[in-house]
Amino acid sequence: MKLKDMKKEELEVLSYTDLTEMILRENKKAMNTPSIFKKICELLGLSDEEYQSKIGDYYTSLTTDKRFILLDTAEWDLKEKHKVEIVMDDDEDEDEESYEEIDEEESQDKEENDEESIEVTDDEVDLDDSDELEDLSIVDDDELEEEM
Image (cartoon, rainbow, N blue to C red; front, side, top):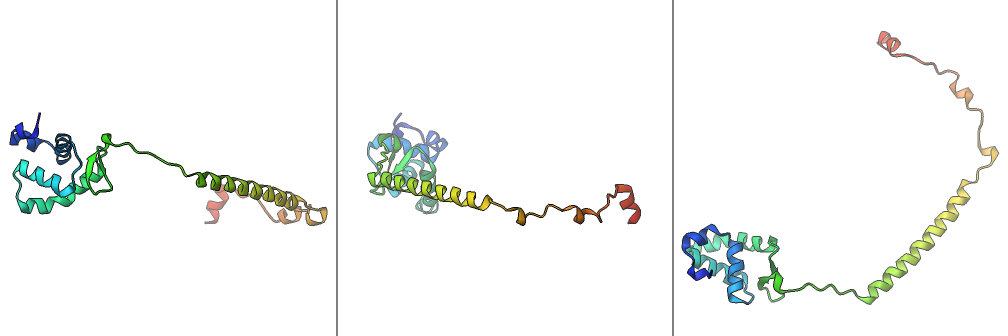
């Protein structure tokens, strides 16, 4: 059903973004934010003051709605009419390879350093730790409570 054929009561039930989708489908071309919202205000009979106070929130709702896309021309269109193309630059692939080579070299260096740091001589290890434990005693919970 066309927007101009709909009653005002039917239009008021729809959200601004639903109305935007219908407007863009009927016009079959992209439109800027003020033009679309002006059309919505005309359909709903909103005043210029309401237009001024609500256009910011309207713009925010367009940016968060997945049905719409903001074009380089600062116009909104239906996302389904556009395809998103991701282009990988060859230079980026070369950079990734060089990073991988650097990572491999760093990990080899680290392994070599780890092996060197593991070597410990007998002179460095004190095997007689029992002296440190002589003065220790085991105390159960009851004895702790009595002391308090």
